[in-house]
Image 1: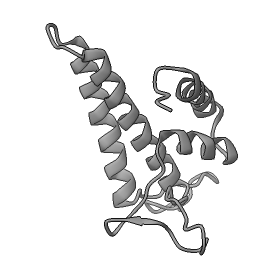
Image 2: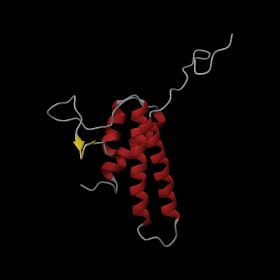
Image 3: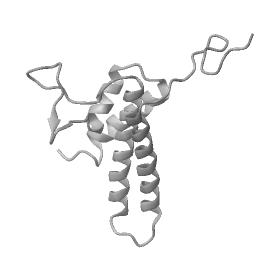
Image 4: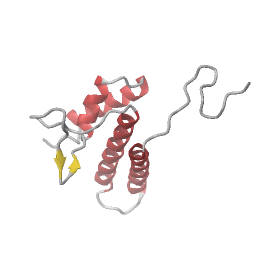
Amino acid sequence: MGHPEGSQKAGLDMPRKLSIETEANLRKAREAALLAVETYNRPGTAFRSVGDVVLMVIAWTALFHAIFGKKRIKPYYRQKTRSTRFERVDGDFKHWELSECVQHSSKTRIPPRERIWSSSLRLLSTHGPLNLN
């Protein structure tokens, strides 16, 4: 007897559907990365390397948010006084920025390939041109 669609086949878990927010973050990551490359490759554009960096930071942040979403980790800051509640800005949850995502990625179970990228991003965000402190 065959296995119905969506069930386990040969002991492997079938991929579960991604949440709307996770899919939106994946789309945002892809579009920002493509736009970064397009911006960098556009001749005659002033500040193209700056635009490229900004868009890649947006892309990486959205990708990390999608990874955390898939792992059912909420990438939001928690209130200092009530750690069960999330901080809000203008009514929306305050999301982690890239450096916070990189820190949290090293604390969670992330595949080796993604850990390598996390290490590279951590190095860039603390020692490279992205450090604005």
